[in-house]
Image (cartoon, rainbow, N blue to C red; front, side, top):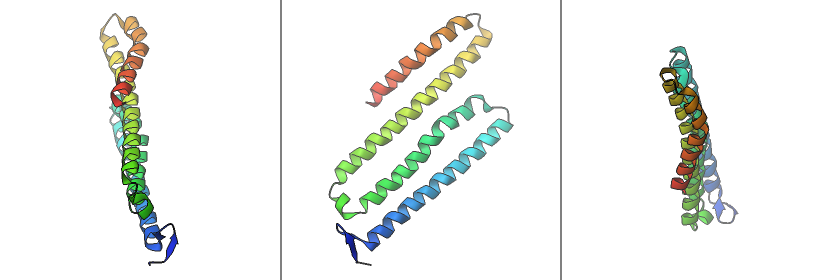
Length: 149
């Protein structure tokens, strides 16, 4: 399997890349199945409120991150990319941080809405809390973005 296809990439390298990408896709599908089962159980227990939203918020970025890790590992196995490993590593780090920031912003939005709804049930100042909610969400999102940057 040492037949060179192009740019120092052999058939063995191509098989490695395809197999790593396939494994990452399988893992992402397993994660999707587990998330759906978890959401189904949470909804059936009537605890759904916040927990189902949190799983929804993290679900898609988690799939993408699993596939991204597979792509990263596959790329590192290629000789031309191995020469530029630092660039690939930094790109992977930037994309991973962006995914985490995206997830945190989504989670904080739903968590804050849930908290305000819960507090406003017991509080007469519900209108004031609901009025301040959009501003609080944006402020926290900006803080998260700045910290992530």
